[in-house]
Length: 167
Image 1 (cartoon, helix red, strand yellow):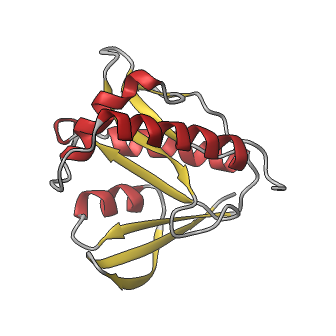
Image 2 (image 1 turned 90 degrees about the vertical axis):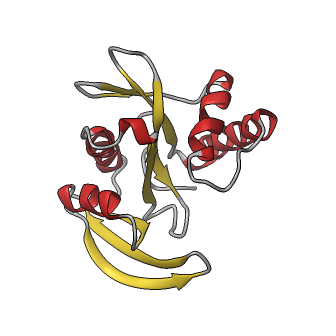
């Protein structure tokens, strides 16, 4: 069993709300994933993925959370902690937003809230892995105090591994 606290699953910032997944997020989650350019998953597939995310959260105490704008109430992406390429002790911070929401500071704002949530669990370090081509994401992580650790080559290209010590 983990020696870490459970991260809060409802986070609020000045402009954003991060909350647990609902089945009603599936269609918009499909649209977000379709923006990657490798096809669009079915709503049924994504409902299954959401169920898996919720089950994993119950086991791990960390979560990837939908991000919605407070005023508009619309789903604009997700942000949270995942095991990913890392470990439960030192999870990865992950985020992805609709292209129409890029360039407005939402990713930085959401990720900052998730960083604070990670600190509250008692963790000492987080990782993030980002494609070398993804300059905007690398900029977000830089603003949050992440530092480059190393670069690995994967089937989709080079990946930068970044890390951040937590207080």
